[in-house]
Length: 212
Ligand SMILES: N[C@@H](CCC(=O)N[C@@H](CS)C(=O)NCC(=O)O)C(=O)O
Image 1 (cartoon, rainbow, N blue to C red):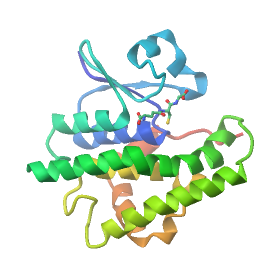
Image 2: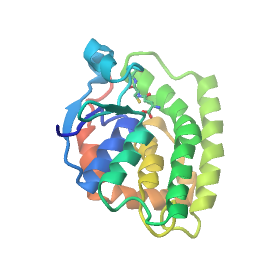
Image 3: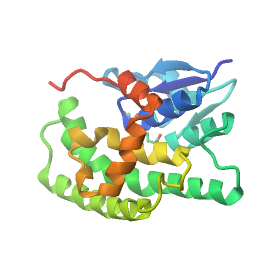
Image 4: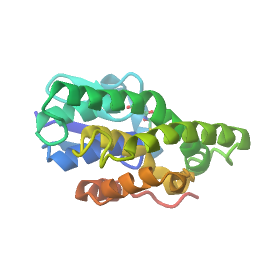
C-alpha cells in the first residue's frame, strides 16, 4: 500500500509533514483532512488517530500520528534530512523534541488567538492570552536566535528535518503577528527555508480562503 498522508497543510503541523515528504520525494498519496468541515472527527479518521487530530501517516496495516514522529519517520525513508553520525542524529532529535515541547506551544497561542479564532468564527483575540503568547514566543525565540548565530541551519551546515519542525510554525508569522523581525538570525534562517521548492509547494497546498 502506498503511504497516505492525512493532513490539513494550512496548519503548521500538517505543513511540516507535507513539506518533508515533498522535499525528500517520498512517494505517497495525499489525503486532505479538512478541519473546516470536521473531517478529523469522523469515525474513519478517529480509527486512525483517537486524538481526532491531524496529521496522520497511514501505511500497510499501521498508522503513525504526532507530526514530529511522522516527519522523523519520513526522513528515515530517503537520504537527505538526517545526519550520518549518531551524535548528529541525536542533535536532530533534541531539536525536534524541543519543537514539540517548547517552540510549537510558544507559537501556538498567538496563532490561535490572532488567526484561528477569527478564521473559525471564535471571536476576537483575548488580550490577556496574547500577552501570555508574546512572552512564550519571545522566550523561545531568544533561545533559537542565539543558537542560530554562526550556524547555517539548526544542526549546523546541513539542512535537516529539525529545520522543518522548527520552521513550520513560522508559516503563520504574518497572520499571527509573530515578531520574527526582532530576531535577525531566525529571519535569516527562515528565509532559506522559504526558498526551498518543497516549502513553496506545501505553502501552495495550504492556501486558505480569506477569513470571514
Ligand atoms: N501534537 C500533535 C498536535 C496535532 C494537532 O493539534 N492538530 C490540530 C491542528 S493544528 C488538529 O488536528 N485539531 C483538530 C481538532 O482539535 O479538532 C502533532 O504535532 O501532530
